[in-house]
Image 1 (cartoon, rainbow, N blue to C red):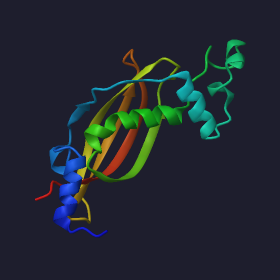
Image 2 (image 1 turned 30 degrees about the horizontal axis):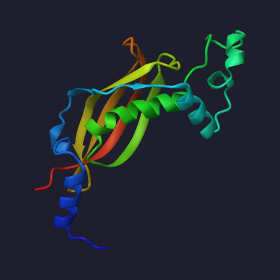
Image 3 (image 1 turned 45 degrees about the vertical axis):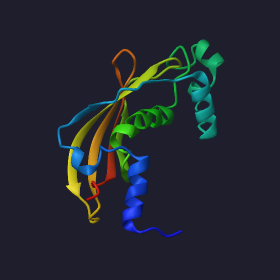
Length: 166
């Protein structure tokens, strides 16, 4: 099925928000994402095993209870923490994205445990035109925090974002 540009824009505008286009962001903007997400034991064990992570610290409760790990309980796998935090930002910063161009300089600052609730903030670091007339590139610093306000992860995320249809 082939659609012309006007029909394509109509379809896109019906499934994405009316804001968060390239023009809606400015360097220095801070976005506090309103939703939080509590990490469950099932989330951690399933994601850890699904991704074939073999680090027992994520799924061996007995080992942790016996004091054979750094922490007294299992730690949520960092790949899951990053995924949840980026997901929490999606509605506000990448709903009109064409592509994620990269994730850089991810740093896990504090461990996440089962039952912790994650929240996210995004900071607009850079904004520039791309080689596409319909999109620009925005670089964000995404910060994930737990329910205590402790930073658990920081990630730089570069996104190709649609410009507002004319």
